[in-house]
Image 1 (tube, one colour):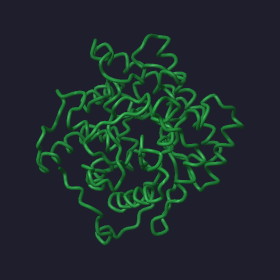
Image 2: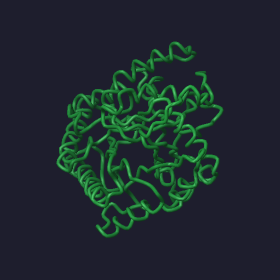
Image 3: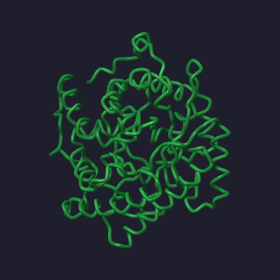
Length: 356
């Protein structure tokens, strides 16, 4: 097991940094929630905002939120006035809006990026909707930085494996068209690296997509500590594993450096998170990297040290904030103030160590 290192002595990091801004994600109140058998109910946007606003570590608060553009938090087809009211609500809690998540999945607005022409058009429609909402938030003033996150919108890798080269080429084609849409709106897209998304389920396949699109000014990578940890282990892609069971600390850091050296130049959005080496799924969301509490005793990652591999030269890539992702935490965990204070403490440590 990789030693987590515990809480660093703050005297090691005496400088006070204003960037990156510290954000919390709103989608843990939605992803994996619902009204199906065994599912927990969603948590409203306003309650998620209030839980986030209550966190406080020695006077430091969360400074913003990253936002999921789908019901019940947001109707992606909402009117301008409805969206302005949402912006007012977020601003009233003292938050900026950073990155937005486009509703690209089947069953929402979008559809699979490796599907037929009709499916591709639905995917692109979701990106257009996200760009429209971003523009309204930008004009309002609540949003001044951040990206729009996408993924392949194809759960699991089995269908992709039926014809991997052709399916990757189709994803690349869809992403190129989406990137042009974003660029025309003055936005950038970030493709989420996560083992459940076909064609993006390993560090090598993700790199193939990014290089295939070849538009770094308009499409980059969104790295999440919990998900990218599993990249090194080759979950869903054993042929690209960088580590074998029983690896040593030295082997871990060598593998982690190899992965981050490949993906960091593309990284324009970053999620701080913890993982215990397991995969997890809830509701309609397929199994992916399990997000753990910041202080989880089974966490495999030294969060602060791992973050440094991704945040090196981040300012030059336009990164202005980082976000915590606690996707699929149980509602009871989300309701506990200590959950958020522990998260915020770790976010502060990351900024103290690697900020600017």
